[in-house]
Image (cartoon, rainbow, N blue to C red):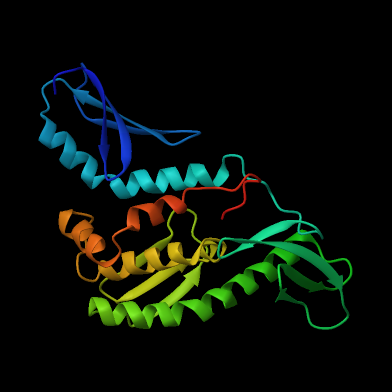
Length: 239
């Protein structure tokens, strides 16, 4: 490298590189915006820095998602008039008291939440989570069937759960994938991208050139879809 300080981009992530008198490479993902900086000993060549960063991409993304999940996030109160998202589209929440079964029903651009009198925000949050889970369960099987056929690999099991730092995960040995419940709030194209990403891991375990080449062949605009996962609406809700 010709200069002591520079910025390089690796897999869409900008990394500030600072050469200094240190003994070891030191990588930092700094709050609140997830800016990435690496301190590099003066004697370490370019190719070793690149390999080091390639091996840390998952860790960097996890940190950035975690920061993005908290910066400027609005904590919902689950009251009438509040806006929530389903597959990237805004819906207005309407609370309706009932003595019967508690549930959430989609009607036009409104989410009707039937609750018993006195229920708190925590109970309403769980009701909405159940609604999101059911919506995902309606979308995932069709996408899974389509992409398993295209990729030529099948999973033995799939599930949905809340994850703080990942949009999805793949257990290659057990051929099982998990998808983040928050994906119900994102556009369907983002859900499809995450699903394909995890399925491709059945062909290539690591995030290397072969993995990205496979992603390019299946979803040429996957980088744009990945960017959607890091965007927010004005009120801080996950879109």
